[in-house]
Image 1: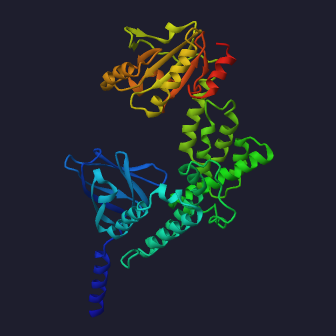
Image 2 (image 1 turned 180 degrees about the vertical axis):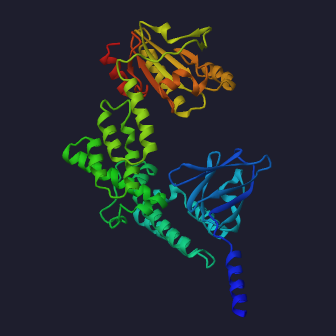
Image 3 (image 1 turned 120 degrees about the vertical axis):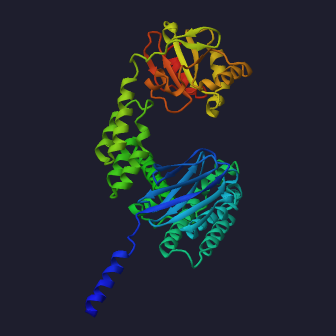
Length: 452
């Protein structure tokens, strides 16, 4: 009877034992939030969760199967956060003083308060002060920073987390050293600067095919990318091989599928309007990549590039508001070359091109070409568009798109970043769906080729 009673007690304890949680409880309060949403991003910068932030700045949600390093973002500001199943963590911060005010409470707070403090420790040494230093002083500052971080671990931190952070600090240390040559040249305005033969290569024994570290540490991911481009550039210069071929040959020998897919994504920019033969690199990427979502998106881009190739009929715009009065359509400019500038008043790089655009317009004022600027500002900023045209004395034909980014013309050209320049011939055929910018001498070379 006593044995039976003991068995009942044991079974009761086992049945009442709390099951291991496969989720994180994340809550908090944000003073002066930048937006009404808090986004949780993984190591590939993909959103794994969007959390509503109330008008009072409070939020609370559950994140399932979240283990490792993530980032949370509030508008344009973001910070690293470390999550493990079972954490019940509360964030408090003031978005106007984002990093300086981040504090955590609850299960998982020790680890995340360490991360927040680590950022502030690194921020004490500005990039300018660090990289402007001469070699010996730079290395001393870098070593001192690493030592300070490694000495900041407390006994209440999870052992697994401590090991991860030690690895992270080491990779950050190596990455910063790798940046020194170029950064020192920039901050000292000494473009010819090269590190001495005594400058240590902290990455000389690094394994560049570590899949787990690639998924976990952004600094390691950057080191892998730097090594990839350095090795490919060596082959290009030494053997006079095209970049896309050298890149593909390198990637074929990468063992990790995750790293292989990551490097393939990094060279996917070669599938572009500017590449006269994107088919080769496209086919190679499609053959080697195992990321089906990425391949689907790349195929859509490639099909658009083929559709908008030189000599193809240009997509049209119709009845866009003309600052000079009335409306204008692409067909109104038939018989002339049309150089189109897609821009917006909020776009810094767009505004940076204005002086060069004015210069080119003046140079070709009496030629068979029309300069057309299309603003994709939202309708609420229509007044800002008119004011900027007036203030900056913009020339050419100034048009206002009918539905900003969602205008059919913008979508038909696959425009997802500005400024974007397009050149169309007198018959309405595409010369270039991504023409050189006015500040680029290649634009005048193209005009000369066309005898404009």
